[in-house]
Length: 298
Image 1 (spheres, rainbow, N blue to C red):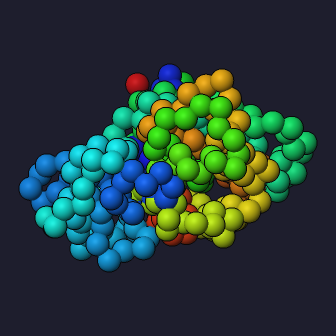
Image 2: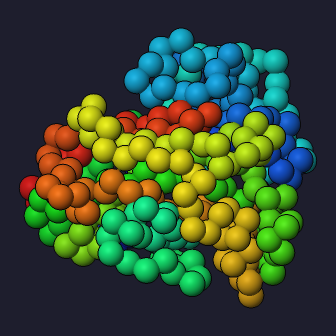
């Protein structure tokens, strides 16, 4: 999964989820190893596998090219063709995620820094399909939430690639199509947010060890969050298994796995996303998304 592209829940909560490329690894239903969705030089929307890139820098896609991917991106019928096209604009790697399943308070240092005990089970909240934004889209803050308490949250986003239910932790990663980066924008007044979506989807074959991944958040080019996935309280297999108990996870489901320490409201001197501020979320081996905040007047 502003993030897999800004998503919003009742116009208040939105995630910068699918801004960059999406990486996948486990279900072997795809011919691609990295996946982007983009507007090409032919002015058409395509899925594609980016050429000669490991991470996508949303600040520099002027030379980005991709092989067009045809067919259902989650099924065995997809194909990476030899047709190469220039990418003019990056879109969220998943067009219409059926749902966003979001995990709260999932990093040890974040829990400690906000004076909360580590939860016994994952804390779940849900966002709708239309909370999605593009990797470089404007994050629009509704007037009712423009109280100078808008926060940022860099998050690893997991995209389900194969239907699953009642999955064992040991088998959970078999159902992952890929990973991307998201920015869960929160209106602390309402504890709501707007999602920003990742630049690409990266397969599990490429990211075989999630615990090595660094993640960062910059606001106006200043690094405010810098951590590692290994600080998670509940790892990705545990989260997938938990969410699938008595509940079917369908292809395209985006799981936002929580944010590390350094969020604005928990700092000694709180830092909020004000009108015109730039927020850039980054995860190693995936890339970055960058969005400008806009406070709506009406």
